[in-house]
Image 1 (cartoon, rainbow, N blue to C red):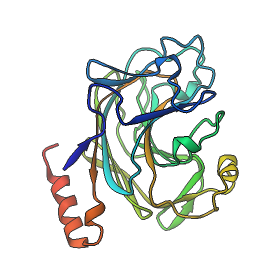
Image 2 (tube, rainbow, N blue to C red; image 1 turned 30 degrees about the horizontal axis):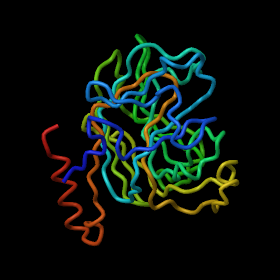
Image 3 (tube, rainbow, N blue to C red; image 1 turned 90 degrees about the vertical axis):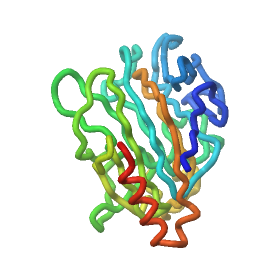
Length: 253
């Protein structure tokens, strides 16, 4: 039932957009496959210079579980912002990369923020950030840009398994190593955002589907698995959907 979005061999099915560069221009060979891993690297960057990038899977989805296994490696690229230390993300409900403007830094989307900890201090992963969007949490509209999850801190270069349950414009759950760490719903466009304005999107309109992308934010990161379980066909049968979700939740972690 799981679809492997990353085949471990090449970037077939993926497209990229890096700030300041044309659609599908893989500046500096940022996104590459080595040793069966999808790597985001900066060895050909003289300076990061806010060249934020994203690699998008070709197919948009609405109801699904996306799962990745990731780790941060090496040192941050020269010129990368302090907040981008060990920082990447899974962007869901993204706009199409073909609609992004050349100088646009982030796609309009919901970001499942992937973070790594330093040698000291706490820094949870699978937080929520909202480029051009808002969500509802506990029945209230949440308009602050980021909120932390309840996950523990992962340090060094250890592999972390992150999953996201996405049910259209209703429920979204962030899951780390099998534990649910954040829940919210009603993803919607934020009419205050300049990219939303330029795209002509309606403020407050809920987002039911979109593309999925992985981030390039100046710290090298590797993905050894990117997979998706499509729940679309179960949405007309709530009992079947709950059964499938229970099976997925009780599988060997």
